[in-house]
Length: 286
Length: 86
Image (cartoon, rainbow over all chains, first blue to last red; front, side, top):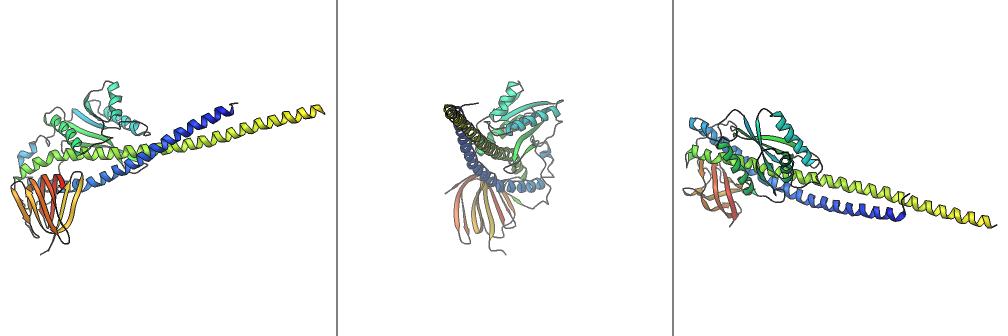
């Protein structure tokens, strides 16, 4: 039977862990709120952009030269670039594990193609680097802090890679933030750029040639997609960490309760034992 | 004719302005354009400069640079690359 002192020590250590997990949970909650605000803040521009691009595309639909634009041109998918967003740190439940499993499934599903990775986040990079998987580029530190410029630099790399015909398709794989308890693994293709939704052409006054405006709009499509993915992924990461830490705090609480009960029982047992010794000792004297 | 139009200014990171405006001055690539209600449909690249607007009960200005502006049916969408309160 463990001694009282051992049990007390054990309880104290669990309580310390509980304090740490509780603090992490609260930090994640604050970060999650900020990340959610950013997701919402980015929506108006994305929506305006989609509408604008659809209308510009409708205006230049007749222009055949645009079909051969380096970001629109389609090639048979032989080489694929997979942009893979994970967290930089662990302790976020199954967040990174699920992503890595999904990436492996993606690679297995495209086993007859050449898949290269662009990793965003330390966890995914470490996993695939250890397995000597080809990594075309890696970015880290975005779950701490990133802004639109970071998305632009990633997008620029992807665009150059695609326009230089070094890859035939670019996919993003990330966790989309649905709610606190659920994130959805999402795979989207960002290159070649999807044709815009068809809308009725508007008779604009064009200050610049419409083809030129569309050419300016196309790289923005990739930037927005990457930015969106970063926002969603970071929000999902904080949500996952918050849930995991909440769970850990609860588990620690249960463990403390169980250990305390056990400790009381041990103490009572020793008291009872001593009483019996005293009583039987007294009886023996009579 | 409508007396106001909807003016929206956004950058990739956030929405800056969404007001009913009576007039606006927008820095386009080829110089400023003034927008009043009932403006013809127009599409232009943006230059760098100060966007000013006068709304029904508010007016303001922003320094913006880069991007596009679309004017369509009394709805002015300014998709700027960068913006800052001026």
